[in-house]
Amino acid sequence: GWAVLRDWLPDANAASGRLTGVVGGWLFLYDGAMSYSAAFHDGAIDLFDVKAESIAAVRDDLAYATLGSEPWLAWWNGSTWSPYAGPAVPFPVHVVWADEASIFCAGDGGIVLSLEDGEWVVHGTGTLGGIWAMGGSSATDLWAGTDSGQILHFDGSAWSVTAWPGLTPLGADCNSVGIREIWAAEGEAFFATERELLHWDGASFETLACWPAEEWVTSVGGSPICAVGTSIDAIWGNSPEEVFVAISQEFMGSDRALGNHRILWWDGGEFHLM
Image (cartoon, rainbow, N blue to C red; front, top):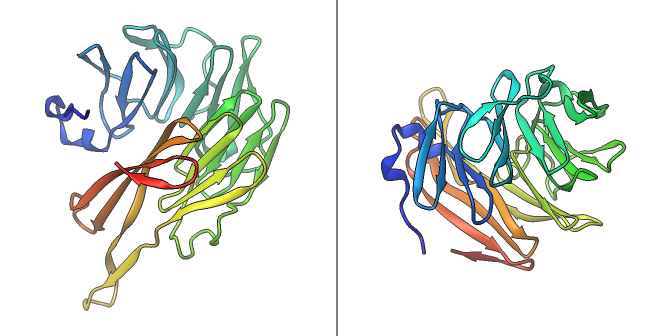
């Protein structure tokens, strides 16, 4: 069942925190807007002075974190964070993806780096878009998403670029912006903008959900100041038949605190409300 963990959090910014971790092992709470990160394990909670923007958890004693605009990585050894002992990252990066043998980092200007033979290699991605999301089944089946809605795929030797292939054009009915979330496994992948969820089944794309926003226009100058809609906060899964989507149904304006938060489970054919 569910248990409340947020009562101990030291500041309200943690309400926007993100979670990742290892099944049966460490669970990390982080957000680039927070001045700290947290780690949970066996009922214990540890706070760290690490302002992580992205964390890639590989196993219980190995994880990597990007630190916002800082051009270096942090490394988790199973009990604490420390600077990555390998070569320094040559550019600021926003997001990291890793497995037992590989580390990939990405950032603004279409920058993707991978660590090969002890040196960082800059990839030719074919885009100058800022990359804020990465996910993959392996280092030869890796996906990235840009802030302009491009989807990038790496097959182990080269990157290919695809425009957002959803049912609606970027910025149209679904009010989509950049790609915020990617989760992939077993040759399939899921991509989320703020209001649209896309699925790659290994051969083609399909839109699973699209939630347009509705703007309310005030009588003062005729400018829209708020909107009502459903936005996608995070996606994560155990398999392509067990994917979880965190959503917010909210009144957006000067106060974003008003709203309802839900978790949807995608079973490979339909959504279920948890």
